[in-house]
Each structure stands twice: as structure tokens, then as C-alpha cells.
Image (cartoon, rainbow, N blue to C red; front, side):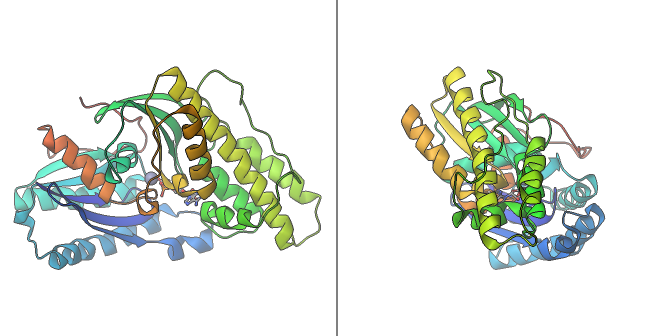
Length: 336
Ligand code: KG4
Ligand code: ZN
């Protein structure tokens, strides 16, 4: 079976092909970073229009490179939500038109399920697993009993972890997106000079709160000479990253213990963070849990994870109707 994947939920246009026999054979991503960078964040209308311009040429290119025609495929998997509605509609309409015209199955994929299942692209999943989903819009722990069976254990009360990275980076004068910028800046930073709060670290529930971090960083930076020196930025970035990573890892391991998971996984753009990967690996080792970090290309938004998630549903005899709708927000749902 071959499934074309389409991902347009935010600011990356991505198309991919998952082949049951060969795995991911192509995963193309067209980044819109340059388009949104001057605004310091994603501008929804610009994102939709860029998807509209880029999507079909990318699909055309992918099929030509693989010497395939649409009728050689079995299904089209597309992100139905959560995400920016205008951006999602471009992907959904294209997927429907292609599937309808070529007689293929249509599979709407939940973006978060895509991020979670991306872990299966790096090796066989060890289940049950506690998965920390950390992206620009989401911070939650999901218990995965099996592929298609999920339970959300808890989420952030305010900002997402990626948002915390992006907003604090802006305060430090670092470029957008802030996550990779803080990851790089923190490398040269010293620990111990600043101390930011780790909210609710002792809470027995799976909860996160990152909104106070911005204030802590702003107050610390306000006491320093302007413009901030590279050393100040590096030290502040280091403690920002440490404060975020410490609570993320503590919560993930706490959830894994409570639910007797055999493995822990990371998912979403923030899973590319080097400190988070190293801290999770160390904590998992100490707790005797399986952990394999995702390839960086499968952390941030990509259509390979959507194609794979679509294939999983198709392999279980599932598909969606032509009335498939988009959605801006909704927790990940079980389909088995
Ligand atoms: O999953 P993703 O590509 O898009 C969403 O669905 O939101 O995640 C994007 C987020 C951004 O907030 C970005 O700053 C963050 O992932 N990110 C990182 C790193 N790379 C991307 N955060 C921390 N460290 C990184 N290396
Ligand atoms: Zn995402």
C-alpha cells in the first residue's frame, strides 16, 4: 500500500510518501520561515496563501521523482486539525480533490497523532508508552496503549513549551523561531547565574505552566546593561532552557511511573531540543524505561508522520468520507 501525506496545519508545507514495503520514500518540506520572520510569528493568511502556491507543485514533483502516477497510490492522508483553519483548508481541499478524482481512499489525520506516531518511523514502538507532545501549540502527556489508542493525561494550563521558547527568545533579541535559537545560544551559557521558577514541580497531576517564565526572563534581563552582551544572552538562554526541560522531563517520568509505561517518547518541534533529548535519555535510563529520540526531521511538522498515521488507519480498514471537516482544536482521539 502507498499513501500520500499532506501537512499544511501551520507554516510548513509538506508532502510525503509512505510505502508499506519500503517505509518513508520521500518527505519534502517547504519552510515559510522567511515569509513570517519579519512579523515575529506566523501570519495565518500568508501561511494559507503560501500553501496554496506550493502544495500542488510539490506533489507533482514528488510523484515525478518517484515515477508514480496518482492511480499508483492507495490513499491520501491529510492533517484535518488542530491548526490554523485557513491553512488546513488548503491541504484538505487538495487531498479531497486528488482522492476523489483518482479514486483513492481519504484519511483525515489528527496532527498530534501524527507527531506521536512519528516515533514509529525510527524503530518499532515499545508499548504502552507515555508520550510528551511539545510543539508551538501543544504541551501535553499522552498515554499510548497501542497505535490508535490514546489517553490524554494532562496539558499546559497556559503557554505551550514551544511558545515559551519563542517568546523568551524574542525578549533576548534572538531570531524566530526561538526554540532552535535558544538551543544554540544556551550551548555557550553558564548555569547557576540565574534561577527561574519550575512551577508545580511537586504537583501529583500532569500539569504545566510556562506563562510565568516570560516575566522571570524579562525581570532578569531588565537588571542588565543594554544591549545584552552575548554572555548575558547565553546565560539567560541556558537557564530558560533548563527551567523548561526540567519540568517537562519530571512530568513525563512521573506519568510513566503512574501508568506503568514501558517506554517514554518525545514528539513535536521541541523534541528537537538537544538538552531535552539528553535529559530524557538520562532519566529514562535511570528509570529502566525504553527511549529512542526522534530524528530531527520528524520532530518539526512533516508529512511523513501524516502519511504513516494515515497508513495505520487504512491498514485497519478505516477511511473518511468526502464530508471530512477541519478543526482548529480538539484532543487526540482513539480510533481503535
Ligand atoms: O511541531 P512544530 O514544528 O509546529 C507546531 O505544531 O507547533 O513545533 C514548532 C515549535 C516552535 O515553537 C519552535 O521554537 C520549537 O518547536 N522548536 C524547538 C527546537 N526546534 C523547534 N524548541 C526548542 N529547541 C529546539 N531545538
Ligand atoms: Zn506540529
